[in-house]
Image (cartoon, rainbow, N blue to C red):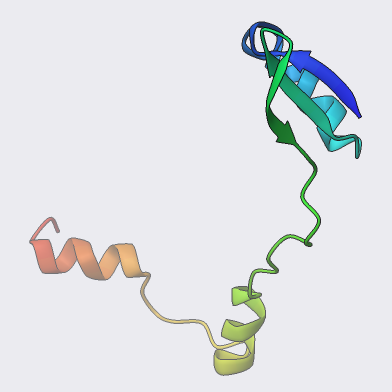
Length: 79
């Protein structure tokens, strides 16, 4: 486990986070006393739904005659 001070964390956050992203755990100290531990995330990121595939499944290759922007413009009276 690597150790760094709060001062170094403030001034070189990018370097410390690069160490953590590489899989290393970093102990944060204040006056040589440990106050926190930074460790890499262990769970996988959340998988987001594939909205494009869902729309393709629902509507297929159907093309609408007007876009949503055109419909809103007409409702606002901008045309």
